[in-house]
Image 1 (cartoon, one colour):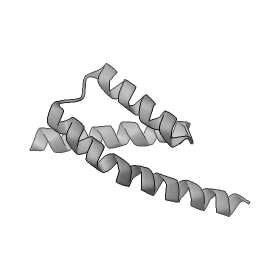
Image 2: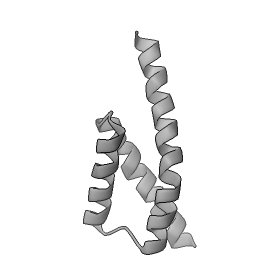
Image 3: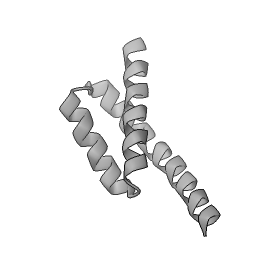
Image 4: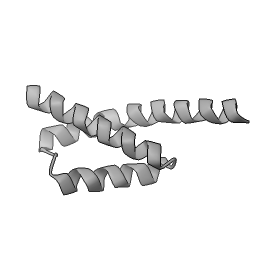
Length: 73
């Protein structure tokens, strides 16, 4: 369980940093998947955990980016 939670936190950090570079969610997902597989972070359980939480993460990122856009315009 400790390794799973650590791996998930690592994924979130990587995903968030990639999202700050790319404003497009789809590109962000592909970069995230590519980098994660490239670095070999995924186990099967970690993949399931990450994919189940990916949508929630994307929704929160979308809300933040919307707030930024509204604030700047």
